Image 1 (spheres, rainbow, N blue to C red):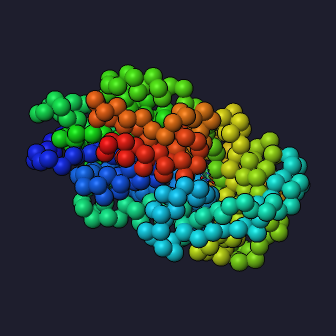
Image 2 (image 1 turned 180 degrees about the vertical axis):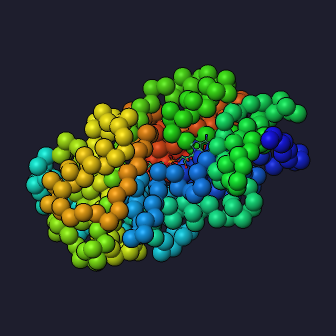
Image 3 (image 1 turned 180 degrees about the horizontal axis):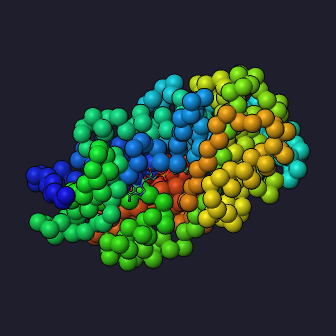
Length: 356
Ligand SMILES: Cc1cc2nc3c(=O)[nH]c(=O)nc-3n(C[C@H](O)[C@H](O)[C@H](O)COP(=O)(O)OP(=O)(O)OC[C@H]3O[C@@H](n4cnc5c(N)ncnc54)[C@H](O)[C@@H]3O)c2cc1C
């Protein structure tokens, strides 16, 4: 079923933001605060993108970003709008492990805090999205399939959106946008611009960006209750051939007490096993986890997640792309790097550039 939604003309700039990760939300809230009429389209059910949190019967797993740093004063100020939501997670010092899982760096003194929202990494995005949601201009489970010139006003844009909320899939056209901001991973920007047949210059600029995948394993050991199994440490980066990072979820502030671990495969291993069956991936990562931690107990739950575009390998090298003549902008962590904070700065800078 197709329908058409148009908005009545006014002098307020009408902006569509595609993606409700940290970059999209930083962009959307800045534009909304500046008086723009902002509509957000997010293909998932929840907010936060790769700042993700998975529920299990035994507690949550931050299966995307594990924590974030705060180096930019503007990020610090933005976090101040939700006081108490994010707190530092010391993990009692993140260890560095050799390929055999032996600690080679005991507990490097932290040079900066590792921040985590509670009860899960997505809580920050959910809090920032709330005022936008209350304005009634947030569409969840709304995947933008095409960006095209508005059929009624060729100076504006309209979006073809696949709406999967509710029982039946529904196709809708949302029209009347002066500007469209894409705050999605670089390869998805390329796919969307290409499918829309627009903005070849932007497509060319994004082509140099490279992003790597990440298989992530989530394990819960309810039989241990709140007793820590295995190592005395709570988090480690590792040079094991399969595993790059491990963290005890229950050591993070505001999480449940049941012993739970999140394990991230290395970028190389994830790439090599990208098309593998999830069960096979799970078994291999579980073996690596046991080798490193010595935990050989049967987990109560085992889940895996494949992130196709997890971390930036080659960034764009500038905070955003804004093509004023088209009214099209691009933001995302991949513009600057591979961290949550890069996403925030990118989204903010895009919004500010479009307001100039
Ligand atoms: C496994 C893993 C571990 C990480 N660890 C850390 C860490 O410890 N610290 C750190 O700082 N960073 C970490 N990161 C990186 C961090 O998660 C990202 O830098 C940050 O979340 C990127 O935010 P973003 O808004 O740019 O993109 P995203 O979070 O990817 O947001 C993009 C959003 O757009 C939506 N979307 C995509 N296409 C469409 C479409 N066509 N229509 C509508 N919506 C669409 C997506 O559903 C998503 O919600 C990690 C990432 C992963 C995957």
